[in-house]
Image (cartoon, rainbow, N blue to C red):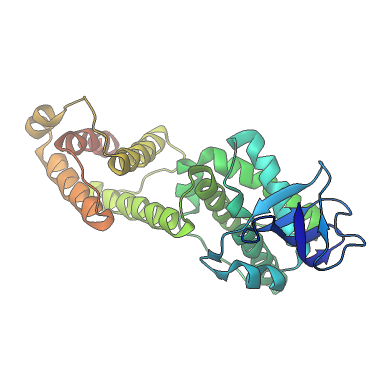
Length: 273
């Protein structure tokens, strides 16, 4: 049983669960039709119910949802359901932040604003499945609003989907992605040449950086020890890798093992050659 706090439109309701604490958004065709504030009701089975956190990174949920055009809640719910086919179950708390982001992006594009995302290519490689799901989401947005989003904006939607998939804060996902982006730039400076983002070597290196960060977050090590070999055969790449691992460790506050230094150095030496 739910108590209605506000009817957003015919297809969306802001309500309170029986515990009188948990706020939810209920979405479904005609779910708000004829409903009134404070009315108690049991929704039909063909609705989607999203619980809301009290606070988001953009502020209070209750305040934010009332400022948002309900159309974007419906669009975002459709994107989430489409993404879950490819990614599996997503954290339902993604609804409001992603809807707010999409609404802001559509308004900016209509006003001829351009959003540059220097990490777009990195995101495509790091979170390839999320990016595929985001592309489908962009088609949903186009169909509902007539606004086409380009690669830079698609990559931001992919980050939202990744944060919901791994249940991480969006700010933390952005920080980690930025760290990988900076690390790749440092590697390019070390090898004195740009890396082809479509090359197998680039994709392997990006994938290694992604899983190295995952291991560091989980406190996991690797059994493969390449240190003696890489120190003797490619000492410059080993020294650079050690410096880079220390920077990553300092920036994240996460521990890394000596084995990670040698393993990363092998990947760096591969792209250098």
